[in-house]
Length: 255
Ligand SMILES: [Zn+2]
Image (cartoon, rainbow, N blue to C red; front, side):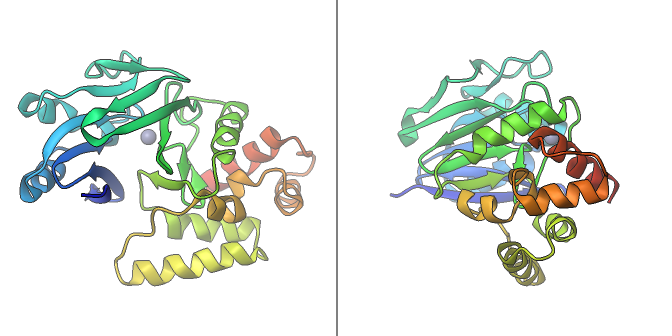
């Protein structure tokens, strides 16, 4: 059976991604246990691994409970705040899930948190809270320069890469992005598409990386329109990508 990637909604805006082949299943960032366990049971799937991106409770809150019932390999960064991880990963490492013939390359993406990692492979980017559809994570622990560098890594991935981020934020993100680039046709189209989908209570994910590069202001800090908007918002920002990024990130925090 071919691979399916399904979103399991949790909390207000989270998605727990389930990657499965109709038999074996891996869960990404289970912030709670009830919803993914019900999903696995309902489908008759066998849990074979957990993939974790960072230590925030809405990403790992369900892990202890799941592992108590299904002691599976748990991949993630080395961080004392994530004691459940037993397969530690750093930049350049690979997470391997033989049951699903999956191999993911690991990229370290500090910014949202200091030890955040993402997983890339099979045209999938499991992006956690680093890259969102038309947005990016808040800088809880990192600097604008760190996050800019992290996003630059993701920006370089192939066009067709699907971005599986952890929250349904697209519509709100579009509202802000349109303040930065009101005349970007790709962004206007994404905003319209997100509005239609959310009206029908449907998921807006996963966009492709090509779509994100065309419309996400946080991946566009070298574009004249974004540089101009940042300098208009905060005169004297200049053109350095990290400075432009820092201004639009804090602009959004207050928006
Ligand atoms: Zn987070």
